[in-house]
Amino acid sequence: MGDSDQGKTEGDKLRKLVRTLRGKSSKISLTVAEAGMIQRAIRRASNRLRGRKGTVVVGRKTIAFDGEMAFVFPGHPKVSAFVERLRKRGFVELVSSKPKVYVGPGVVVAAIVLFRNEIVAKRRWAEGVDDLVLSLLIKELGE
Image (cartoon, rainbow, N blue to C red; front, side):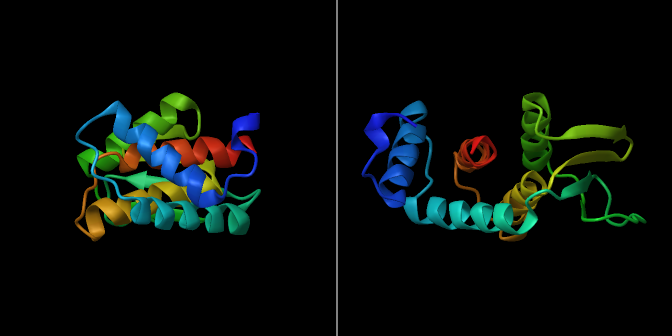
């Protein structure tokens, strides 16, 4: 990072990131507290899953799988769009299109599951959470 980040706490950096995201769109309703929870979850996943691979299957409720780490869930438009954004950035690889099966680093797979749980399972959608998760992943994988 640049010299401007020296001496800043993680909270300061997170507030700046949320402020930047809010500057991109007036619709963003993400709070700093939500952003902090998401950041901590991604950091824990990164520490725990470093060097591991994972698989995500979107569009099915159940599927037989024999592997290291796999998550299966029914399709959801926001989740599918988020996973496609990750694929376009090269974070995950599409290995099958029916059902959609993606393979990628463990931290990316964990971020997809976190995103899916926030959006679908908890039924809350904060505008900008996808941009936040993507920004945090770029930062986590870049370090």
